[in-house]
Length: 155
Image (tube, rainbow, N blue to C red):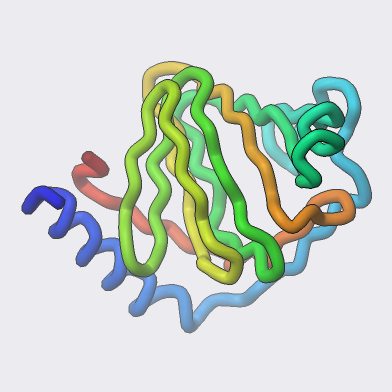
């Protein structure tokens, strides 16, 4: 791990420690991931279910298209691991213990119960393949409201 990454990880931990404990938590459950491209929740992002992956791998799966520069709010999947594979664009994942920068064809698994924020590439839209294992019924997460973790340098 480089010095720059260590500093980013320390900053991420400090931000979570100072902010996470004082915010409200909102439970969000979406009954089913759509089978055609649709808006995700109350955002301009879009997603679509991947039934082939679900059947073959025994997971919940989707493609997720995020607008450039968007931040996916702090959230937790309490009962499932989340694996993100970047098909185009990029994403920076910030947790209380680390910061992970992913580019095209990179993947990372966030273990169940680990809170995380996702910063999408600033210059181009991102397309992600996301799987959750064990599978969920639909999609659900616990959102931590009004968290604005800002890292000066996410690299």
